[in-house]
Length: 250
Image: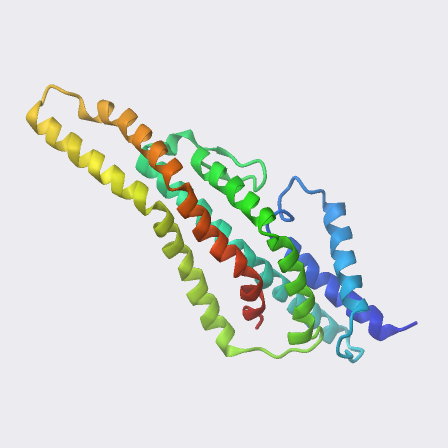
């Protein structure tokens, strides 16, 4: 039996499992666990069939467990590199819902099983559609295969620069979320200021109840008008996600 090949497949399977547990489309609870395991085995077998560096057979159990943990960390980081843009989209939906006064209409996302708003769910499915149409899932798989050239399994070579890059990349989530929600925040400010002036001019008017439908109508209208700009921002991040996966390798 080729123990080197068997160890490579096992470590590649662990890395693929970490990737699929974080990557969009594959990490949702609507995908059966058995199918996720089969996809991970297929990716591991595909990676072992391609030319790769020889991996020395590990004889120690402790070393093998350490290598398995390292591969799981690599897979999780690569999956997180793709997932970051979806976290930004979810945060954008939360900001928009807060500005429009739709926070109370929260519901359970059928994919992530998290508590989210209706705007956040719509933007999440919109980003998922862009993820599929842009062929980013194939780029994610190609980056996974290439990761074995940059970080062979069983080789522990930590990089100090990966941690700083991860912190900077995570901070871009807030920047991207604010960029997508900025038009809605601006129109909410204008509506609020308008009704504040109206409340001062006519104190008998219930400004809070009267401004709620106007804020929702203006927000939905502007959301539809700026959907193309949102799609461009999301697409630019999705297309860069395979490169981001590889740069997050420690």
